[in-house]
Amino acid sequence: MPEIVVCFKHVIDETELKIDRANNKINFEGAKTKISDDDKNAIEEAVRIKEKNGGSITAVCVGGPDAKKSVKEALAMGCDRARLVSDPVFQDEDGIATAYVLSQAIKKISKFEIVITSTGTTDSYSGIVGPALAEFLDIPQLTFASKVILNGNKITVDRLLEVGVETVETELPALVTVSREINQPRFPTLLQIMGAGKKELVEWNATTLGVDMAMVGKSGSKVEVTALNVPKSSRKKLIFEGNPGESAAKLADALVKEGVVK
Amino acid sequence: MPNILIFSDVAESCLELVTLGQKLGGKISAAVLGAGDLSLTSQKLSVEGVSNIYEISHESLQNLLAGPATDALDYISKKVQSDLILICSTKKGKELAGRLAARLKAGCIADAMKLSAQDNGCTADRLVWGGNAIATVASKGTTVVTIPLRAYERASNPASPQIIKVSDFSPRPNKVGVIGKKEKPKGQVSIKDAEIIVSAGRGFKKKEDLSMLDDLAKVINGVVGASRPLTSDLGWVSEDRQVGLSGTTVKPKLYIAVGISGQIQHLTGMRESKVIVAINMDKNAPIFQECDYGIVGDLYAVVPELTKDFKAQLGR
Image 1: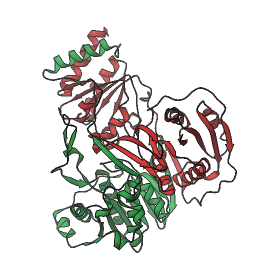
Image 2: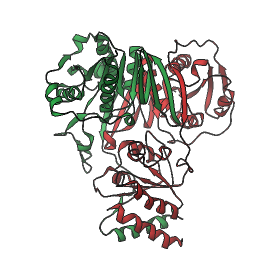
Image 3: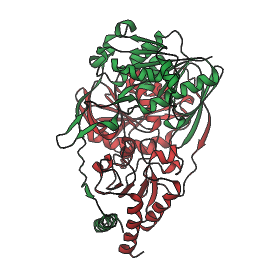
Image 4: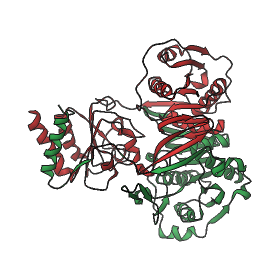
């Protein structure tokens, strides 16, 4: 029966950000937070694998203390226990450093056979953490999964690539990154939400994990964000509002004049 | 002058990295990986700007799985002492970049725009927060960078770089096997090379309604594309028409986004279009910040009118 680890990120809801274009400012104040969209697919897949094959699921999240809200949601969705890896030291670290921290946390969990992540998170959409985590754990990576089948110690994954589907197979342990297409994440029931509070939630920090401090946090990161700007597009942004017929006529006129429609 | 190593699982796209590498002013080495005879690929990459081509032919590299490909690029990277490793942002490219960066203890920047190289690292812009913000990032030391497809012209002047056939490559044991491949059914038209694309998004309420977009596309000689929700989630449109990060990156002369809000995944796939038009109900949709012309309004009212107007204007 597989021991499953699912990793997810607690992020600011990007659809709720207030963008002040005039002053080139992004206002994070009061912005809602959530489990990163595609990470929910990762959690869902972990739960489905467990439902089919038995085993148990440990949810792992690297984040600040406010990530507890998301951790509880993951537990409500069906994870058995959670590890919240939280330390001010980890702030502003890059994807590679986060992958390293996750790898140290997963190694501390007595046994792991399947590690599941999403393909990318809604905040940065880098897609770095999954593959880097597989490398740090020294296990194969089966990425962009649209289907996962477990057969004893063997895992078979359909990968959704540009040209089509590639089916790959390996022996556990392995890391799977899921495509959003793999499933539809469930909404936990009230009973499950209430039950989540009783599940095991352990907090770990840099010291309990015994991480190499040279590899974590801002100082241990090779990439840092030096500026955050509101996109200034060089586009014309000629916007027509009001009567649809008039707007359409103006647009058709402009495109024909510009010569892009012939 | 940085030592630049370039790689793509699609050889033609690798030529775009040559152009970028030349812009950065580095010495460019190209990696050609695969199984069997790779001379054809090396030949494709024999263009001006490339100093060396490292060819590694090994059974384990047949499908360019991330494990063996990491081993191979790790090997070449050490040979050429690369400062910068540029990889095309295909799916195989992206999964390789993260793993390789972890292996090399290097920095990793995904989907870099405006990349520039410094003495000890590089800087780039990348879209974050669903396309609502641009983060400028700086790396120190060796950096693995993925570059969106079609962001640069393909280098094309034939040349004769030195081709080095690697014979002492010994990868770690490869534990992953490819047991099946199913190619996507090819659509009638390719959105990749289309000059005009009319794309549908979540603003459409049902599949049948897409016919009004077909009508519009027909009048202006365009092809119909779609955003991810319509292809992957709803299955209304075949996946080979999906524009965006997980679909196809397009660069048409005219891109008309209908009922598409403009999330990062989509914007990344079409922002290089020459003229962008947005039609959307929501005045605050991000797409309106990235368009040349926009109509705030109900697509169900606007699209038929637009089709009619084009018909009249173009005499069709």
